[in-house]
Length: 160
Image (cartoon, rainbow, N blue to C red; front, side):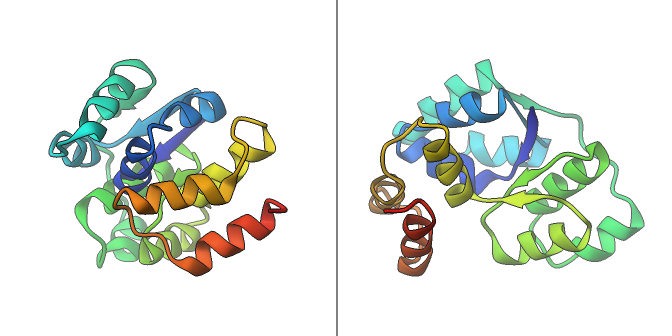
């Protein structure tokens, strides 16, 4: 299966050294050029992890054409989110995105949307990790903002 990703979830999983979950769950992750540029700007330990993923299972797609419908729906989003949504829309693929406004826009366009917590929940369902709560807290502790409510709801859905 192939999925499109925005920048945030990739950074979140890289912070916890869990990008391999995406490879295990989806095998191919597509990103638009704008997201690629955002990832290249990262420094620190997650930068090396992102570089490795970019050389193995994350592929940079060509810049997507943006239809008038997508342009209208995404005009208030940042360029990376707009390109990621356009890529998913043009390719009829699901998208991984954490930004609330971006998720709402993607859903209005009929896209299947998940986020970092959704990826972590799926990883638990497939026995790739042992604890949703622990991984989400680790991601947050390493500097990626996740609310208490999201962590609690995700842990509850995982039966923790």
